[in-house]
Length: 481
Ligand SMILES: NC(=O)C1=CN([C@@H]2O[C@H](COP(=O)(O)OP(=O)(O)OC[C@H]3O[C@@H](n4cnc5c(N)ncnc54)[C@H](OP(=O)(O)O)[C@@H]3O)[C@@H](O)[C@H]2O)C=CC1
Ligand SMILES: O=C(O)CCC(=O)C(=O)O
Image (cartoon, rainbow, N blue to C red):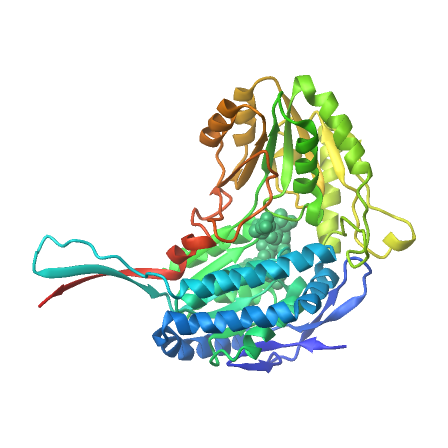
């Protein structure tokens, strides 16, 4: 069985302590492979390599850095099947979704490769007519990237590609559960021949390597996607030592089904938003706010659609929903289902771990629908990160907007309606970074800003042109002859 090691200064290196961890396929409980469990000293070496590489990399022309990203994109494209299959084995997402995500990684790299040719500053008129004043964006230096398991290709790439194009060097700590997929992506950077030390990867536990990155004086900025709890710890650690930080955390994303909604489209968007990727997206639909007058008709259609979801090993043809990404993730989801029952929500559909021959070795949970949920219940307030939705009835749109905003999160929100006035009010009233009309809550486009309001993020935005804000600092330059 292969062990995947760290990537430091252009070489694959086992962790100093020699410890490894097995990565389990959540569909079968088979061991996919092993990855290094690293120590603080491994991290020091990676940061050292990134520090040594940063000046040379920052001095390359943006277009030259872009050429490297184009090469990486082509290599990932050539290895798409292999990378996608590894992703499905490690975290359970269906193979078509894993292929789509890997292709998205390729597109992100190409987008940011082009960014190397775009402007990095502005000329601003000085009050002194004999002076030239302008801004110049410069890299932060070494950037630390901490990523989750739910998008093990897209998220590392949407952080690394802008970091690199703007001249930073990178140390990445991927989620332990998907360290092999990460190693394969990093291998594509290796194959593209990036100068040594520009990209480094250290695998290991969040509390040692992740926390070590937050506290490492050699790392100028930290970009994190993951849980609310860890995100807040990272923010506090970064503030303490004056490091820049960027956080993308949870969501409790509502979809509003208005009285005039096209119910077939609304059901399709709800099912896809809530259950694709087994609900393990920060943009997943988890609260379904339905006008009372059409609730029964909507719920009937939702139940029919839910019954036809094919669950199984994501590598098999025709499977629409895979397992939870790990046993502990499954236990979390099941515990929320129990909470929902105890809180008095009406369990309409699902609610169980799936059992029976092919499911016994995996971590499968049925798509689950609770009805008559009260907004104060835990299942309506906390991120479950599984295939569970809470149906909450409302009587008028004002009430729906209030319910939509009645959570600490503000990542994505959508409405199904044919009424333009309702759409416009929704755009203004909803507290969410992604506002979607007649479309599911999930769905991110790489060329547009991505991020949330309230506790969902550090109020910065990733992707598209917005990424430059985090990965650069601005120098205001005043020149007088
Ligand atoms: N917003 C999103 O997209 C995501 C949200 N989540 C939410 O988080 C819940 C738990 O998932 P989980 O994977 O445990 O999420 P975590 O936030 O624990 O993990 C995300 C990343 O942070 C690392 N990490 C863990 N602890 C620390 C630490 N103290 N300091 C720095 N880095 C750390 C993890 O490493 P390691 O893998 O080694 O633990 C991983 O690389 C989910 O149920 C879901 O609600 C999870 C994933 C993505
Ligand atoms: O919906 C997407 O494509 C991305 C969502 C995301 O960033 C996440 O779940 O962490």
